[in-house]
Amino acid sequence: MTESTGGIDMDEDSSGTVKKFAFVNRKAPYGTIYALESLEVVLISAAFDQDVSLVFADDGVYELKKGQATKAVGMKNFSPTYRALEGYDIEKLFVEKESMEARGLTVDDLVVPVEVLTSEEMATLLDEQDVVLSF
Amino acid sequence: MLHIVNKSPSERNTLDSCLRMAKKGSTILLIEDGVYGATKGGVAENKLKAAMADVKVYALWPDLEARGMQDSVIDGIEQVDYNGFVDLVVADKNVQSWL
Picture 1 (cartoon, rainbow over the protein chains, first blue to last red):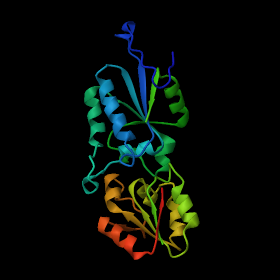
Picture 2 (picture 1 turned 30 degrees about the vertical axis):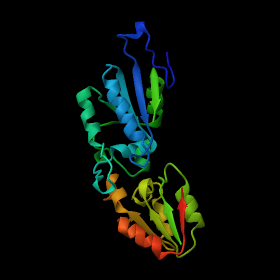
Picture 3 (picture 1 turned 120 degrees about the vertical axis):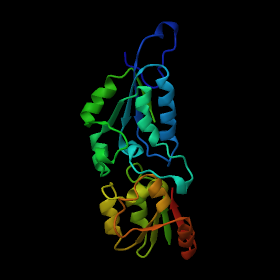
C-alpha cells in the first residue's frame, strides 16, 4: 500500500513491520531550515529500524556538496552528518542525475557515496515507497 | 543602484527578474542562496556572464564558503565580506532586494 506524507501507521499491529520510507530533499542548505530539519527526522527514523531511503533532487543536491565551511556565517555546518548516517544503518542515498548535472556537479563533488538515478528511475523508487516525507 | 538577490536561481526566478530590470551600470550583490547564481555550471552561469557586460556583480564569500561553492565562482565576479556588503549599500543611492 502506498501512503502519502503523514501516513505513518502507529497502531499496535504495525510493531515489527518494516515500511519503506523515503525522505525527499529538494532545498539548498542554510537558506532555509528544511535541509537541517530533514536530517533531524532522518536520524529519529533510524531509531525505528525502518527501510529508509534519502533522495536528493533539485537544490537538495547542494546539501551534499563538499567543502562547506560555515564559520563566517555563524551557522552549524551539518554536512558531516551525512557521512555519519552509515553508522545508523542509513545507507541508501539517491541523487537525481538531472539535478546534479544542471548544477555543474559530479559525484566527486559530494561528501558521501551515493547512487545516481535518472528521473525515470527516481520515479520508480518513489512509487515503491510506503511513506514519502518531503523537505 | 544596488540590487540584492538572495534566492537560488534554480529554485526561484528573482535573479531573472533582477537582470531584466537592472539598469546598465547597476550593481548586483548575490547573498545567501543567491550565491549559487555566481557558480560555474549552475543554471544562471550564461545569463549572468552576459549581464556582466552591463552590470557589476558581487557575491558574499561567507555564503559561498558555507555552501562549499568557494572554488567554483565565475571569473569576473568580485567576492566581498560583510564589510564589503555595507560599503556597497552606502555607495549607491538606493537598494532593491529581490525577495
